[in-house]
Amino acid sequence: MTRTVMCRKYKEELPGLERPPYPGAKGQDIFEHISAQAWGDWLKHQTLLINEKRLNMMNGEDRKYLAGEMDKFFSGEDYAKADGYVPPAQ
Image (cartoon, rainbow, N blue to C red):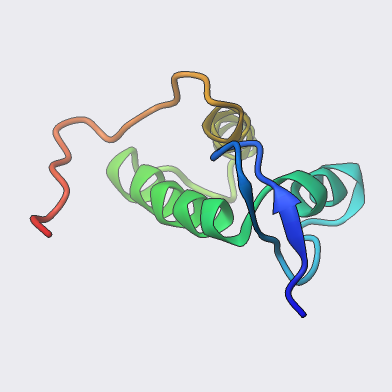
């Protein structure tokens, strides 16, 4: 049976992740409050930010920036978008 969570991002009960995506308290919080759908959406957006803003994951400041944007993405705050990005037509 699939585990469900009250998703902080989408404000509804949705299937949750199978395990915490990070170690520690941050990973546990995501595991308990973020749906698998929201996590997948974040991973796509994260990839877009890394590529479009040319972030270097070896750089601590870039990782800190991305972590802050992740918090904003999940909490419903205004988060960074890639400049000029137009999603493909459905």
